[in-house]
Image (cartoon, rainbow, N blue to C red; front, side):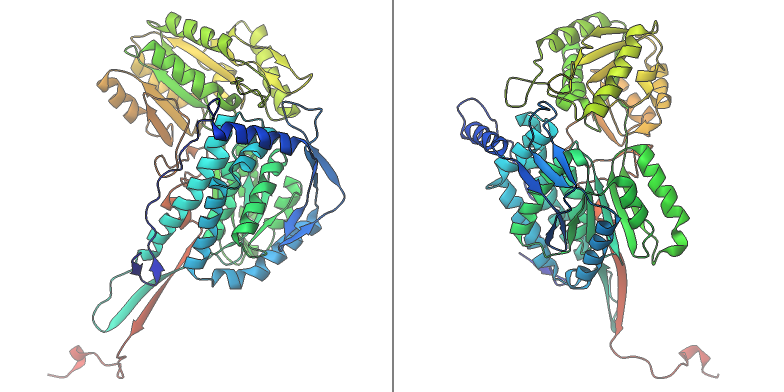
Amino acid sequence: MAMDHGYFSYPLPVNESVLSYLPGSKERASIKETLKELKSKQIDVPMVIGGEEVRTGRLVAMHPPHETTHTLGHFHSGDASHVKMAIDAALKAREKWSNTSWENRAAIFLRAADLIATKYRPYMNGATMLGQSKNVYQAEIDSACELIDFLRYNVHFLSEIYKQQPISSPGMHNRSEYRALEGFVLAVTPFNFTAIGGNLPTSAAMCGNVVVWKPANTAVYSAHMFMQVLHEAGLPAGVINLVFAPGPTIGEVCLSHRDFAGVHFTGSTGVFNSMWKTIGENIPNYRTYPRIVGETGGKDFVVAHSSANPDVVATALLRGAFEYQGQKCSAASRAYIPSNIAAEVKAKLTEGIKSMKVGTVEDFSNFINAVIDEKSFDSIKAHIDKARADSNAEILVGGGCDKTKGYFIEPTVIEAKDPKYVTMCEEIFGPVLTIHVYPAEKFEETLDLVDQTSPYALTGSIISQDRDAVQLATVKLRNAAGNFYINDKPTGAVVGQQPFGGARSSGTNDKAGSMLNLYRWLSARTIKETFVPPTDYRYPFLAEE
């Protein structure tokens, strides 16, 4: 490896290969055994503060969303005192960690990636499958491959940032020092991606920051597993502190603290807006202006052109809308279908959905599993029930909801006569796709409609065999999506290939999985050293004639 300005330059990694889990494969046998092992015992999950396990006795049960009668274990819920403990532990660790050499910091996260790729792969995937109701493929691309990629690529990207140095004129040496932020970073992570849960605290920590990490209650099982990986990889005590206090408590304590230096957030737009408002009100109290980085909601679209292949359109929608029960930030939830292919696309969607099996993650033939919890189930069902009774909408297929054994909702397609019907506009975050059929000759007008219908701008796609239509959509929808796909579903961003994030009400567009995100967790200092300092204030032009 080449040395440059005191830092190793890490080569660009290759994306982690996705295992197949085909019948008879070693990985399929391994994950099945791991699932049995994880289900055979109930685990006790403590908070981790300053490297110590903290138990409160206030236990919260963890159940698989697809098997609510089974108990995976319990986690210990904390309160404001534990959040304060976590902040104190982080600040105590800050000086030593921020002064730890980059090579030694990087080694910890590279080792963590290798542990997930090998020893912990079935356990990270198994915890995600059981705790968050992901089928084996969705777990593999998330809690194994994407998390590994985040860790390895962020090491590479950060090494590239450290290499960026100013020029030096004769007689001096200039250099840039990329410091950690002055204080602690709060990481608030969602249930739907274990990789996001791992990336938000580690990307900040990798830059030399110390972190208070609050995962979603419905993702504690996989977060606990990842903390075990980080501990085994050698992460020092106090660098990342895992707390399970209620969200409002976390916000009240962290956002009012003098040493609050930033928040790395993925979650709802409403919560993020509230946090931003609180931060703004507390500006006079902070040591420094906090960094605010967030990825929030989405109402992601697919626009089909009259030239589109109906098979391509239907496949993009079936995968884009219903993989992981539509609980991806990027999931296709509204689609615009031209009248000339609408009947064929609707028939293919109906056929595809009727072939999808719904059930437990332990049956690998199930494409659809459970939504995350009862609150989500009830909200999604309410949207479906309203559409069923509304003359402006028609349920084409699906719509069944059953929570007797788990939170199961059939993949559902609603056809909206009104292009601004509620399910075309509002985020549902479940296996519900709303389509609107538009006159094939009104493609350009429909693009304007797509741009103006939703306040979000996360992902979207255009499906067309006409290059002029692709060009037109790319220009007119420039601000409608931070990740834009051509002839593909609007999901499946890969670290290092499609940096992820949106604007408008979808977030700050700081592109997780890229160099842009890491700049947010660094504070640059410019240092100039003069070799032969002047000893007289007078400049030559002052000399008399």
